[in-house]
Length: 457
Ligand code: ZN
Image (cartoon, rainbow, N blue to C red):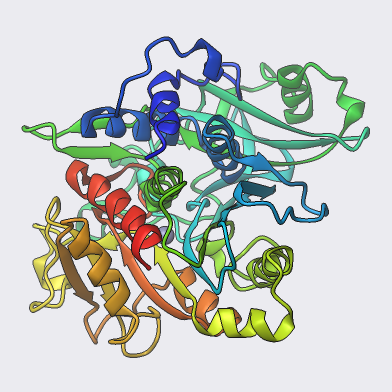
């Protein structure tokens, strides 16, 4: 087992800015022999807190992989054939793999997604209304809009410069706010509930009128560059409240982006643990995609060619010709890791009564006859065997027939690759809320299950 990621995780600090708050590996003083489960959870929460955007998630994952000895491979560089751990990043997506000794004959892939529903700053951002300066936002993905009201919001993202450079920024001060309308001014809220218009009701304010800079001035000041050096941005709003352990027994997690960064960091940890212990003949691959929340159809999403072309290039580096590569795909396996719906105590009737899911009771296998999830009886076998080997309990989720079922990267990946695929994940409540809830033990179970997949499949 490779210890270094666990050591480094223990050294992750807060994140006033990208990397600035991270201790380089040589500054981590105490190298524990092995991280305890509690230390893993603390590190997981710090990693999620450090990653308010897909780009920051990739940065955090890349730092963890680098510190564990993974070698960075440029997007367009030739992939090395020598055995060892490698990774490649592209915007909000990062892929990592372990080239084994000998002649590999298959790929064992764990996939997840780096993006979460949120509010994103518009191109022409500056707005003024009723004596307030505001920033216009676009709604990204299936946001539970009410959960963003009356929160202390920060801002983070990436900016492109005229030099061609791409720079990340992160401002974790509570600079933005979306105040809810007072109950006295919303006569219908008692009878009809809260109704939010995404065009008009979720625009954040950041100062009283004429007391804020333009967005361009603000972001250039954050980056320490002139405003005329900035070409464009992908900037987004996030809740500054830090991820935390909650509940009477301290066994729950409350955090933004549990869907799906909990899976991203479980996979990263499991991949590091798998170095030197992967199953014979398998190339272990981790694929963290962007844009799942909007359908995965992008250059860095699961419903594109990014993974299939990378696998072909890895196969070529490993000495596989076209026919051998296609044969290897036929032997391959994909685990799509994404959060699952735990049964909500206040809405038990929203759940399929014979498929209730309990928190801190095991990893969930997701089944859907209409292929919203890719799992089937055959693809369940390797995963269930791996879970048995790792002493991880398994629960099975099926959606109600009278509600539309969500989806994951699983079906897109299965269709793109033609590889047998299973959809799994840790249970959670309040999926797509600005602050979601899940279980401590399930986070550990998911990491252990994914590590067992790479060690046994
Ligand atoms: Zn998800």
